[in-house]
Picture 1 (cartoon, rainbow, N blue to C red):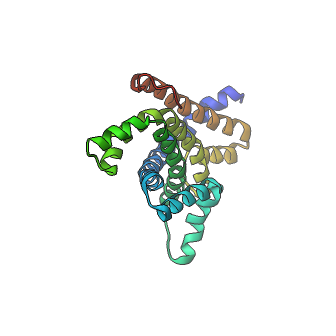
Picture 2 (tube, rainbow, N blue to C red):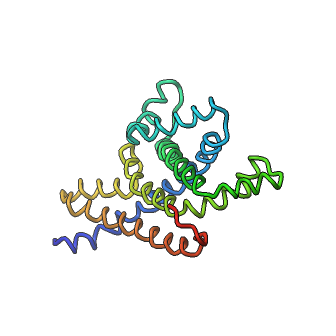
Picture 3 (tube, rainbow, N blue to C red):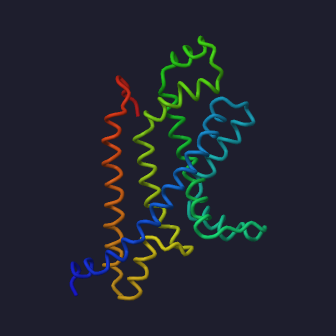
Length: 221
């Protein structure tokens, strides 16, 4: 059986894992986005101790391997009585890791907003929370969109690590095919093609959205 025939026969089976891969990615990204917001607010508007905690979290998470974080949650926490199933542990690890990167993305985007925006909000009597909610956040999301898409695509690829703890995603299905056929090259080639198609699809779609939501006159990012 040639490589092309192999791909035609086994790629549909491997591609079925894309559903799990996308579930992991979407839920992890959503968790990261939700956790990033308080991190950004603490970093920009919090008192010194709160800012230190926020910065420490970001630096520690960004400075340690995601695989180690996944093992810490899935294998380490049960030793102190906290146990998660493989899917939950994967979402937590990916999401909490992504939160640190998304927090930095938003921090950079907020820094790119002209100071006049903050002064205008202050002159209108907005509180810091209102300024963040109604003035800063909508603009920051638009500025940060390209970097957020890159983070989403990165999560698609990083989700492959979840296969190590038993999640039957694209990579895990490629493992099954490689073990069954003894043709590892073709099996993982099929997985690589599927990952590439997914990443390209989201990147292309995001570029189209970015063109429509770009802030006129903004040249940063």
